[in-house]
Structures are given as C-alpha cells and as structure tokens.
Length: 170
Image 1 (cartoon, rainbow, N blue to C red):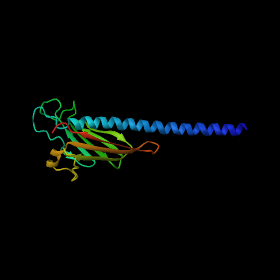
Image 2: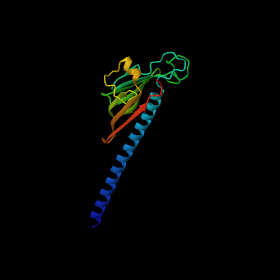
Image 3: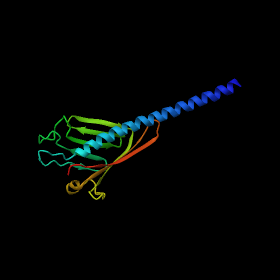
Image 4: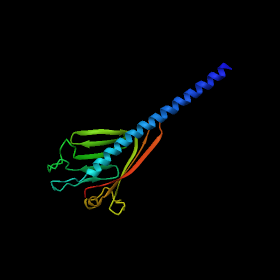
C-alpha cells in the first residue's frame, strides 16, 4: 500500500513540476515578447520625428522581415546619434531564430527562439500596402505598422503576439 501511495505522490509531484516549468517558461517568453513589443512600438511611433525639418525618411527600409526607423529625437538635424539611438533597423534572422536590433552602436539580439517575424504596413484608411519592400512613395503613405512575432518557449510551446502601431509622424 505504501509503494502505491508513494508512486502516486511522486507521479503527482513530477507532473506538477513539469507544469510549473512549462508555465514559468511561457511567462518568461511572454515577458520578453512584451518588452520587445514595447521597444518596437516606441521606436515606430517616433519614426519620422524631425523638429529641425531636415527631411528625415522615417522608414528607409520597410519589408516583411526588416524595418528601419529613422528619427531626429534631439532636434540637431543629425540622425546618426548614439544617445539617443535615432537610426534603428530590426531584422529577423530566420536561420538563427533571432530578432536583431541594429544601431550606430552595433548589432544586438533582442529576442531568441523566434520562428517568424512579419512586419506589415497600412495606409491611413487601413489598406494593406502589400508590394514589399515598399517603394519610397508607399513608405510615405504608411500610417500603421503591423507586427507579428511567432516563437517557441524553451520547452517547445508555441507563442504568437501581434499588434498594430500608429505612426505619429508623417
């Protein structure tokens, strides 16, 4: 009887531990995704900030798996500043499963375990601008940027987040 009860308790504890680890992994990955979305949202909303009116092209690159945001946050007419970062490129490296953020300071992996990153672009009426990479004329029409990131927790559980960001400047 003791052996049966012990086996049941050990089985329950093992299952509970696996469940806890899975929930913990998912929560950690979701937290990382939220931080990345917060950063992306802030920088997309700031793209095109041009108080010196120097002709900043807010999205010099707008493709399905890459987005470049340019802004003049300090108003000096120069977008090559390091602090704050004013020229930022996000790229999805499918082979590595990484989302990278590149600035004048260098290249940084901001999210691992990524299966897909998709940027989509919409005009002021909500129409999808589908001819990617976007031409200069289409980039000027962008009012919303859609972002979808699909990833996987360390234990293989799929996680997908999506959002649409309003572009303030333009």
